[in-house]
Length: 414
Image 1 (tube, helix red, strand yellow):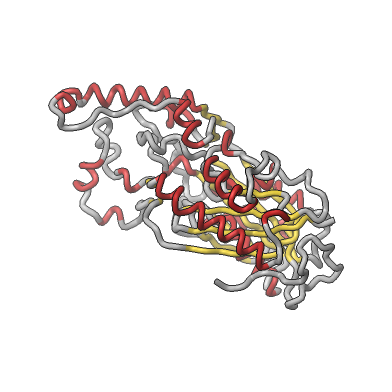
Image 2: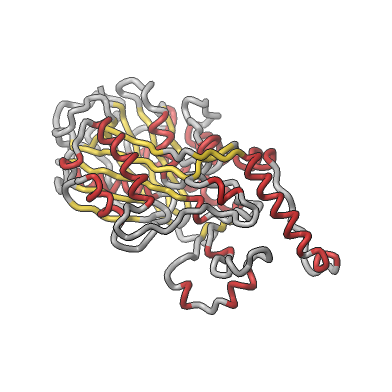
């Protein structure tokens, strides 16, 4: 793994000297602004369960004879209590609630747009970006780079990032990237490296996550997991930043390890396959509509396996990263972790800190936002950083499919 840490201070809590280059001769990097777009529709566990259970009852009735003959098992209902116990999620925000809660549809209704209209992700990105730019005191035309990093892009090309760049009338260049739920931390490192090297001074990194569109709302084990949101982060070289109370990026660390435990097989090669193969795995109700949306073309995961394999990997990543800066878990004031599952966050924080975390040390936002993929850790940072005094040390960490994980160590300036 490449070394991308700024080793300008042995003690990450020490006051940073008023130089604009670190000890390795690279430009210092600051996060000076963040933004958040939240959809207006909120769906509670109770509403989601009512829709799911209505579909379960209808599907069991439609297949009553097969169930009676023992040819298939009856589907099992869900419950709000089950969802909270499994994940810690109580509700989620989505772009369209009506389509999701319709037992005969159970997917968001997002009409196709004309090519001359702004894309959905571009609109989300503009809203989050404008808030982040305002917080940083940066004009869009001052940007040198725009990165759109998320788990699912609504089209292969032209890049959503280039569309967003045009909508904002931003300068520089732009590109898309995808590392699933780790896209934000991978995007932050990409932005930070561009600034460190001098190829950019100001970078906008945006995470427009429409997770409800790739979620199988007819799968009891995962129908509750995701929500929609968009986050934005402005990163600047220290010598051009006007905000003095941002967060310095002390270092970044990334890791990937291949696994099929989290997967989504949707792609342009799907149309080349024999559609009859999809029919067999499609649901009985509305099978004609869903013949090209078989289960493996949506989000699938082996939840227990993910928990067992990812938690140790992430805890080790953070601990090792801290050690490279001559720090440890006891030096952390805040952990902005990926918001996928409450139990995973508690486990990781416990391993890093050596004790149970407080709600202030490891803030949770998934209770009301659910899993928003790469946006989750940035939402936690956006909503839970203002109280930290100068010199505070925190880690922003995301993890997910791949497996992939990213650690970003931050120190509050002042």
